Length: 332
Image 1 (cartoon, rainbow, N blue to C red):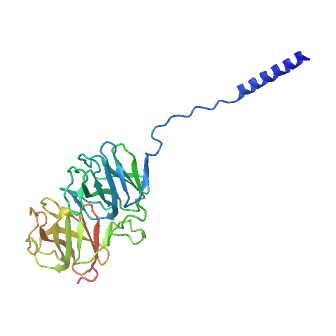
Image 2 (image 1 turned 90 degrees about the horizontal axis):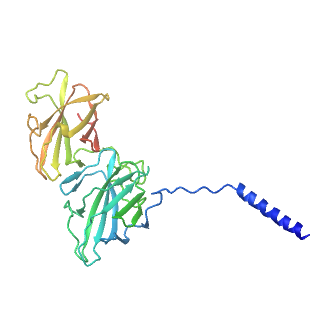
């Protein structure tokens, strides 16, 4: 009887071992680097956080806003293209340590609705100025700074990541937080105000930020007088668009017809030929004129149009920037 019990136990042990041998082994999980989210915390506008390990500063994001206007960062003009807008970030930096601190390594990354990253310009400016900020913060010193990021013209920027060196990051949800694009470039179809029009409806006599220049399109008139020694072609007349342009850059510039991209349509919807950029009140070409920073210069865009057909619409852009569109159906 004892022998039979021993054999039964031995049989059971062998069967268990066999079954264990048939159980498939759990495969080892692969090691994948960079799949975890960066360490950090969610943040809100107005909250203060300490960022940076080696050279910490207290950081407070004060506001975020969208614009199609240029921003002067030191001597560099940051101008959004027609398919871009600028995300302007205003913040304070405070040195909580007993030694000097800098803003070196502070970086802003805007993540758009397609999950594409857009990194801030490398320079900062003091709030309310175009002065590039490169100084060190003395112990307990606090300064208000502005940074800018080029982002797509369309849609909100749902996420902003603030990082300093290899330290933990701050994550901001900018939905319903960033101030919308100012008129007239805000797309009325986007209730959030975050989408910028490539070309916006405009009015004569109003000044618009157009890349380097602030431009006021004063009036549109017809002329049959000779221009640059050239008689008006038979069956044609000149269309003269008077523009006052002020250099908003940090250095001198020589405007020419290459400064402008224009599209003039007549009443039938046919394109009207652009001819030349002329001086403001003289029948001379506007060339080789150095316009200093802050200086205003007057020019005329000259087109050659049929003399029996009215005008419909004029679109003007400064190079590849956002444009303004004028309804000229009432111009006689």
